[in-house]
Length: 130
Image (tube, rainbow, N blue to C red):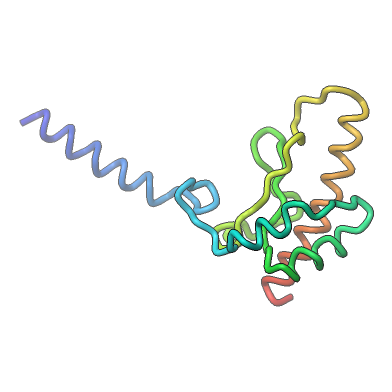
């Protein structure tokens, strides 16, 4: 009987925990961004000087993913409403990290973070109707 009570408790507690996971942290969340949009924009260049132009180009291909960078985990600079990640997804930029390899690496990450803030903020405003 005790074993049955423990099993019941564990199953109920795991269900409660599963319901409290935000969708952007749930690996089973499938964003609505189509794979063809991802493929079409995968090879587009990134110009750190013009995040607005890069955003315009990607949106023209229906790619509404936010930019994610590495830090002490995954960060979405400039994005306030992380629920949007559940609908549109994100693209993680490999090479961004909090483990710097050189001064140049650190400078490039900082430049890219500034780019991501502008890109994500503009995209969030566009998708939220602001």
